[in-house]
Length: 521
Image (tube, rainbow, N blue to C red):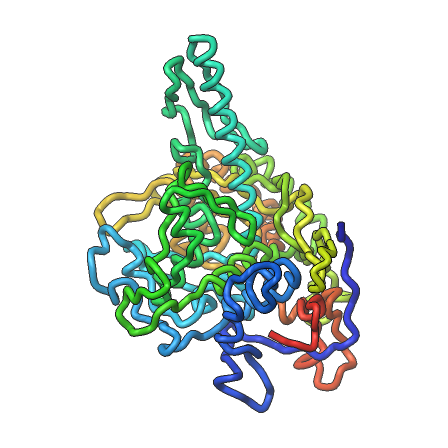
């Protein structure tokens, strides 16, 4: 098993990147900036298998850093009309009371909504899928959230099944607390006839499936999330065989290792029923081939978690006060993943000595098991599936009612009252705040809390000015960062480089880990 800090590279030159990237095969430029490969080259040999060079399954399993980087370049890619971009769902027309995605677009890249800080899968977009708007969240640590939610779901459902079996065997009703990873989701009551009473379930649907994506907790998996976003925000329609099979009731394991079981969960079908369909009538078929979905899912599974900025006695006091106020009863700081499906972890911390451009330094560590399968191809590099403690996430992956100040209107006239606990990592750099983006600073969004968080909110309001300042100082150390401008053990940078800091400022340079670093993405 490979689980070690990766060596620094020798070359300090680095490609910078803005939020969106041009395809330099379409728009060549003197600076040689942009995506190195054309869209056709990114599609490659399709999905293939682990013995099909150039296919998504070959690259994910044998050259995983390249797959992550390719997914990142697809995320930043400015799609063209010729590639099928637009129109979006209904081209802005239709029954928005039923289909909120009519209010979602139109963008030409994922980075149009998730692009701050620059070059990251960050925050920044705003759409009208609800009348009160929807503030696009950052996607740092997205794979960690998917894995936590999936493991919690399995544990809750195991509790349910054990209670059902006991009730049937004993002929008596059985009540069990629904607790996973220290989070209480209420109680479930199993009856002797094999049915269950879910009226005591809290913060999750009666099916006990934790849905970590979207403000109200609406989607199970990264794969559904990205296929839906390609369609709703960009008018790019994927036929994805994995989602098609799972939505029809089959069980599928995606290339990123996520199990989608249509017999247990309702899985969203892909927008195109097959690879030859053209639902939006723009005469472009198979706009997002399955290999592109594979690389994007793998990228977002492995995407970096947020950073932690300078810690001082004041931030330590602010952290203690979060506990004392009761904030961490919902914003739980650390959660354990039992089986980590990522191939690497990146830890980014305050380090003014090595953080030569923004005082942050990132350390990448591989989490793979490497094996030679005798095929003559590069070795298989697969996730080691070891436990991983997710630190400073500050969430309970549970829905709560925070009172009328957080309620939102739906187009059909109903009111959405419960929302997922927003993870606090990255909160220092993601203003404005709230799922709707209507709070201008951290003080305002904390004081906006009510309902289940009323007591914690009142405790914050009663703090002295210095104590309140310490809380805000700590929260402001939970930050996002631009990967291409953050020095790392993959590219530590050099202050003495010519034209510093345009050059030599360091980066998280995944190209170093490619089987062939001379072949850029």
